[in-house]
Amino acid sequence: MGFGETVGDVVAGRARQLIGVAFGCIAVAHFSLWAGGDGSGEAFGTALSNGEIAAAAPEVAVYAQNHPAYLLAFLVGAALVVRRQ
Image (cartoon, rainbow, N blue to C red; front, side, top):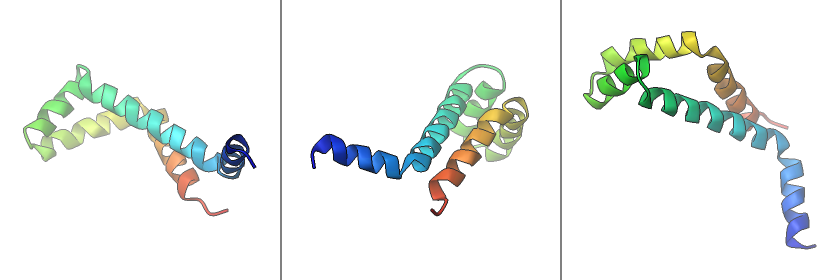
């Protein structure tokens, strides 16, 4: 069995997990871009860098309200990764 066949077998057996990892990575990338941007993301990043967790928490709620699809993508991705066969 060649390397390509082995990789193909692993990918075929772990398709759900790979999709879950992709969903999770997309959601985390979007959150990091949001945190580095301006507006409420900038307020979150500033509060977090200053160690003001209480001030950063409401900004996370704003993110969840404005971007529910990315939050859902992260949750679905996590569920696909830990799901038993």
